[in-house]
Amino acid sequence: MSEGIEWFDDLVPEDQSEVLLFLRHHCVQARAVADDVQESIRRAGLRPTHTPAVLISRGRIDEQLGKIAGLTPLGERRKAFRLLIAVLAVADERRRERFCSGGCGHWWHRLSAG
Image (cartoon, rainbow, N blue to C red):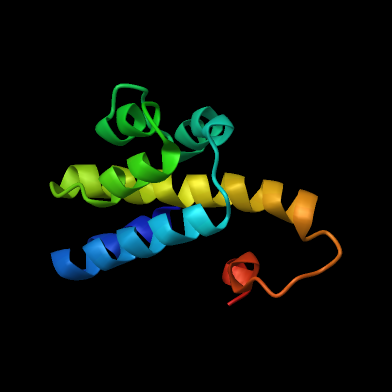
């Protein structure tokens, strides 16, 4: 996570926005659900009162992920990045176990291998 945050912080704001939207898209593709929220907040190291944690805890998760990806202050973007990475990890683990255990072609399962 620390390497990812360092990389994210070095991006210009426009590229940070693209990364957050990219992550949001893949969280949706990995079929993130409301049951993923608390574990994702925990893994991201966020307090329940942090803006991204509050957002993801309210409403439909796909809509809330879009709001999180649209946060603009740097401190909030960093938290959004951490949370979206955690949501993707939680959703991906579940998807691997349930739907991809026999093999699949989802490239995001192999992000850490590259």
